Length: 91
Image (cartoon, rainbow, N blue to C red):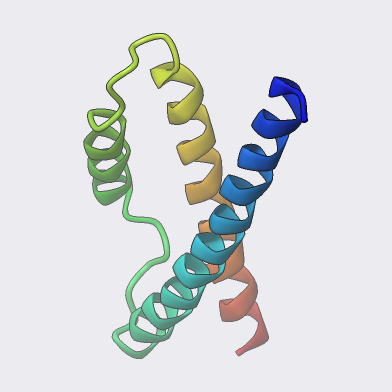
């Protein structure tokens, strides 16, 4: 097995873990929107979003990849918001 094959296997395993974590995160997003609907809260909390983006970007040790993580994280939050909007529209 080549180094490339080994690296690809490791990427496949990481991707499997990402899928699992994504599903867990969105299950919690569903609980959050149910709470927000019940309490008549808005979907968007820009202060909270900025706080969690910064907090998580600060966890990245490699400065070279931090901007890519920030872009990914902001996109994931945007997807979470879209999912919440979809749930609100269904109710």
